[in-house]
Amino acid sequence: MAPKAGRGSDQFVVRLPDGMRERLKEAAEYSGRSMNAEVVQALDSWLDGVDHSRELERYYTENPPEMPGPGDIVDDTLTDDDLEKWAEERIIRSPEDIDRAVEQILREQAYRLRAGMVAAFRAGQNRKDKGAPDK
Image 1 (tube, rainbow, N blue to C red):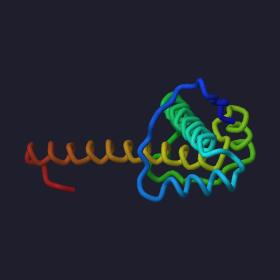
Image 2 (image 1 turned 180 degrees about the horizontal axis):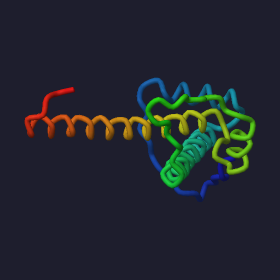
Image 3 (image 1 turned 180 degrees about the vertical axis):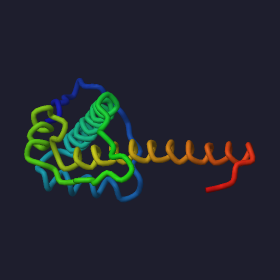
Image 4 (image 1 turned 135 degrees about the vertical axis):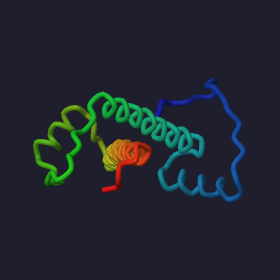
């Protein structure tokens, strides 16, 4: 929940694109809040997501997932133990967290795949430079 903002709170003027004020007004009416409270709530939720994204990034940097090797059979089934562990560690708290975690894992996999491809390419270049026949 967003912190309460009163008249003496910090103020910040925002220029809204055409139509956004009306959308904000409708959202505030729907949720039963003032337009200001709706903006504060939206910003607070967004900042929580930004903070949590950083936590996920830090977690996966410190605890990279094990990547399968060539020829390994990949079992992509999540077990109840996996989900329980993530819940205990407060890594996955919402569907958005699942998306962030998957994005982080995919970035790491892509980086490792790229590194392997670059190494293979360089090895091939070295063989060519030394006059070795291509395989």
